[in-house]
Image 1 (cartoon, helix red, strand yellow):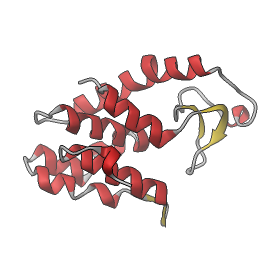
Image 2 (cartoon, helix red, strand yellow):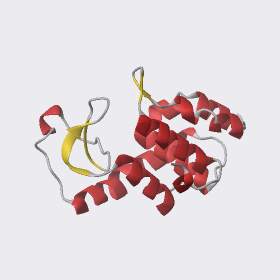
Image 3 (tube, rainbow, N blue to C red):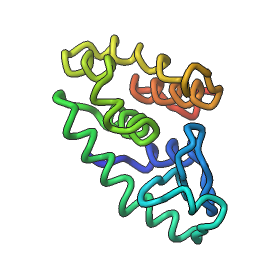
Image 4 (cartoon, helix red, strand yellow):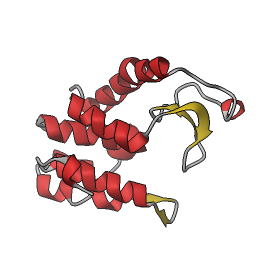
Length: 153
């Protein structure tokens, strides 16, 4: 299960790319296209990478990890758009969140429509609803349902 170029475009637009380490909305040290691998608090505001490094980190380390994670927990066949949506979801929230979700339980039980309806429930950091997550989940859901994520404002 590999993310398509369309899925990567969704991920990149959703994440944005920052070449200096920062804390994400949950306070996790992050760099590049939303990578958290190997970063520590002391890296925030100090560690920098070049664009080519950010791109390679996404392509060579982060995506393979999330593609494999999604493949390990999804027990039903997926089309490319569904795979892209779920990999983006897991990239943003973690494979553990997907693995323990009602979304995955419904999908693995064959309830694709029910799984789709779960995407909007994942728009919070703590108790706060983040507009960027509302938009991202709407785009993932559109893609999962076979549509174009680019058509979701």
